[in-house]
Length: 218
Image (cartoon, rainbow, N blue to C red; front, top):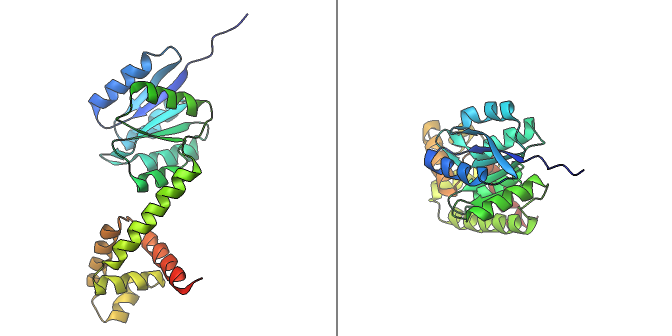
């Protein structure tokens, strides 16, 4: 005697309540899946995931109190059996690469038809990975080319700070090297990170070092 397969258990994270309600309605209308938990903030997401034990977590990338990518990384670290599907309003190479590095199985635009989202949920629940390596490599190349162009447009002082960051110098050491106040260097660092679309100093250091290696033909 054949038995019906258990429905895919879905957790949804989105800080827009109207969007969340719409997605919940689309998912719950399907006989082979159900929403077992939802959250509107990154802060409550992990607690709900721990309580409901979903098969798939559908996570909005941009949240009012954080990033869905960070939530994805935490879920994959603490609950590796949970597959993560990222939901976003627009295509973003940086978010695509970060989602892949965080262990996401897929990346879906909010503008897709409901049927496409449902199919993506089914596919990742079945163990499929929708983020193919070719797409990630292309996104990385676009980011690199964009970053190199931006570096070339940095003012001389910021460019020098960027190069010294790549050499591993701290803000204090850069200040001594350039004979400037440490606070001024901090301002330069903040400015160049914004222009390069980076959040952390370590990202700028790694990028600067790679550019230097490429120039030297390493």
